[in-house]
Length: 205
Image 1 (spheres, helix red, strand yellow):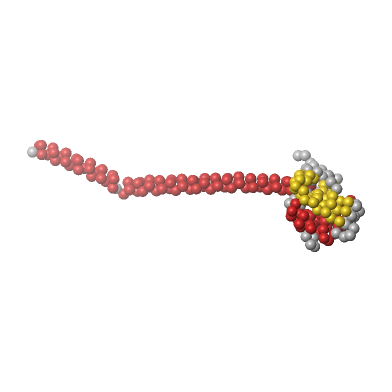
Image 2: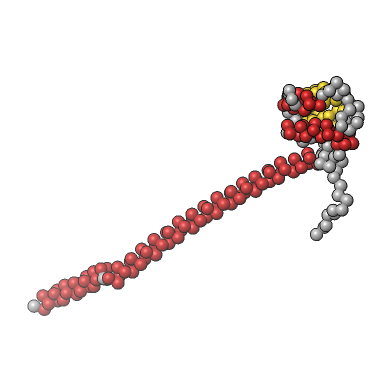
């Protein structure tokens, strides 16, 4: 009888601890903790995905910013070169045309001629080896008997545009004014007289 009671006690104790273990796993508070941990893990993963997305956007912004800086720098180089051309800061060599004009031109005719050449797209021009810059007074060339106008640019385009019927050469040519336009593969136009400011001055910081 005592042996039976002993084994019965062991059985009851094992059942007690088994039930306790089962309740620890299945009780509501443990399920709530598990749900909370899952929620935290989900939120952590979501935060990580957001951070990766933000870093990706930052990288794209940085790359675009780098490209923008390069774009602006390239544009600056183009604008700077164009400004140098207009101001005649440096000598230039390239293909173009040479206009040999025999006969006296008035100031208005010179203005019309140079404006027509610029409208074709040329910016580097000289008259009798004097580089035309922003403040060059064309009136100083009026009344001369001979002009050699050098123009840098697409020689074929320049020649055909100036010689076309109704073009600037056709408008100015008379029995006393004769034009000859020569295409040249290499023309050098020296730097012009730099613009001088009589009243403006640079202030050093």
